[in-house]
Image (cartoon, rainbow, N blue to C red; front, side, top):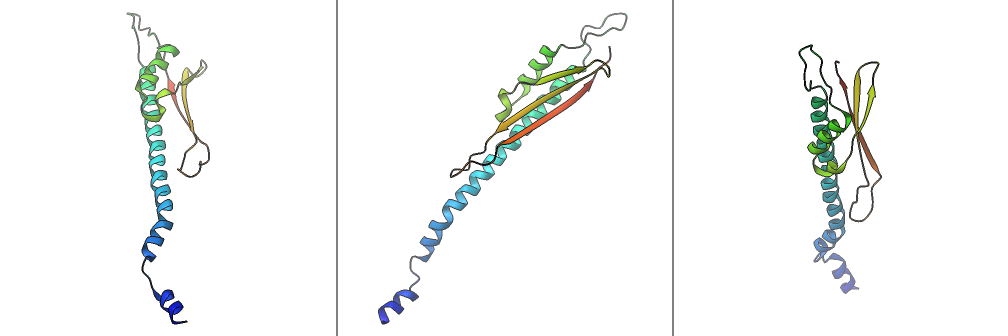
Length: 137
């Protein structure tokens, strides 16, 4: 009986056991923070591309003496947006809708991904960002 009592009070190796139990949880948390950082980077890349595209869409191309401006085409705006995207959002293609009544264009980007947390997949994440640009003709 004394041996059992002696073994039950012995704490040698307890820290190794605690570390072995905590390591997978800590690794998953760290990887989750990295994955969340990628989502923030994708959001920043989308906002940057949309901002540059919106600025470009408001430019007056080839102004004439009569004060008439040529508005950039949707293809030109798309090229500008895609050239300014970075990070995980780098391969996105914007959709542009034109409202001739209010003389505006809406530039929209959607980023979708499924986060991976080493031991399991997270829920699907979809981020959509838009900018509305008003232009004068």
